[in-house]
Image (tube, rainbow, N blue to C red; front, top):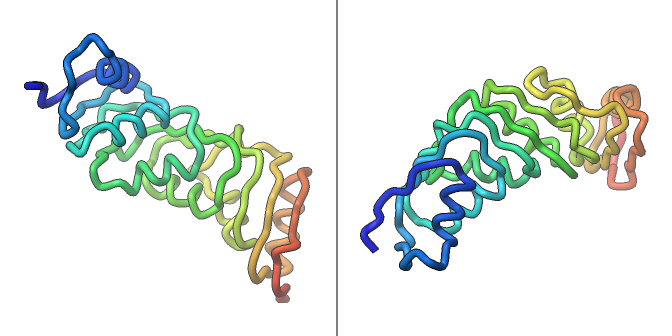
Length: 173
């Protein structure tokens, strides 16, 4: 087809691309995305095209796992605003939460995060990061690797949720 760029909200771009009444859209179209977008819609656009995705007009990414949002942020074909707000849900690696916090000055709502995984130091760093807001006080933690006793104590103080530390190989301090 002759379509070189599709512009609109992420949901509208996905709907246009997936509309069977439209003739086949080439797999290298560019996309200019605006408004609020779900992580699933942005990922669907990224999967549908090898073209550049300018999502700098996206004000918020909603309903995404930390892993998937971190992957979008790391993808060089997707340009996001440096102040995009992000809502993450589900199980999250502490390093993914920290990567998201580093990439945006926007608000990161993590109240839907049920479990944080990683080393004790990484979990403490993610929990204490001021870019992350509203981590529930009952998140579960799965701790691995070497752990400082002070970090394990900090995790215990931060959550009333279950802390699984069977993956801890050494406790220091």
